[in-house]
Image 1: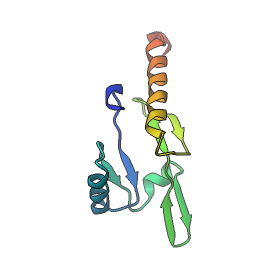
Image 2 (image 1 turned 135 degrees about the horizontal axis):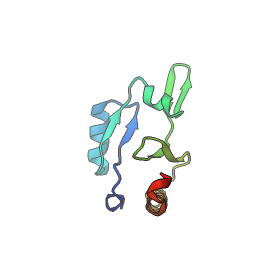
Image 3 (image 1 turned 90 degrees about the vertical axis):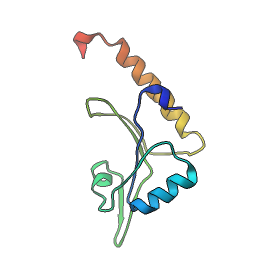
Image 4 (image 1 turned 135 degrees about the vertical axis):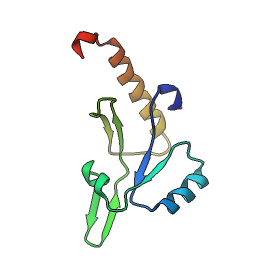
Length: 105
């Protein structure tokens, strides 16, 4: 679904690489999962939930533009419809980028 939109997809969580490999295999994920065991990436994206000894990465999705800015953020993720929602947003963002005159970029 996202492959035809010229977008790279990665997943990031606090879990270790072995856990990621098992999860990706079980769910046949077509994208890589990156391990963030110290939570630095999650914290940088305001997605780290710290409860004393327990830490969790919130399930957020970000669309990061080619220039590095966050073009869209999804704080509520419904697994049943999320891929379609992200694809729709990507199409809209890509359509806007194509319509912007080069001098205005």
